[in-house]
Length: 90
Figure 1 (tube, one colour):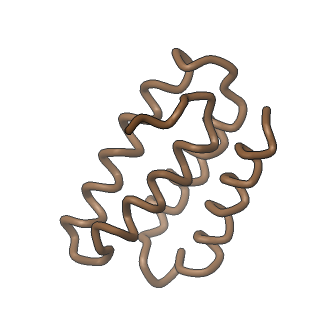
Figure 2 (cartoon, rainbow, N blue to C red):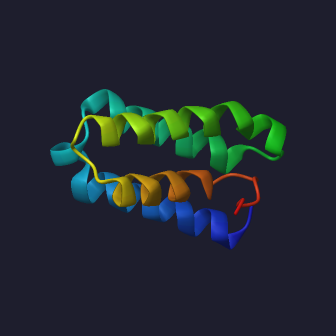
């Protein structure tokens, strides 16, 4: 685990604390916490791949619901993915 991963985890937790109740349904809050937990403890990209796909899908749903802008949802997705062992792409 790296300091970058733990910092990303902290950003996810702060997002949940700051906007969780107003911008996220309870099941979305739980899923985000579970995604971040799964990724922070994953040691290989293979362990993280399925979760990353689920995180991307959640980001798309948040935008489609009209509750999140594309930019804000992308930031959340980046923070969650950064909790894991995958190198950023692009």
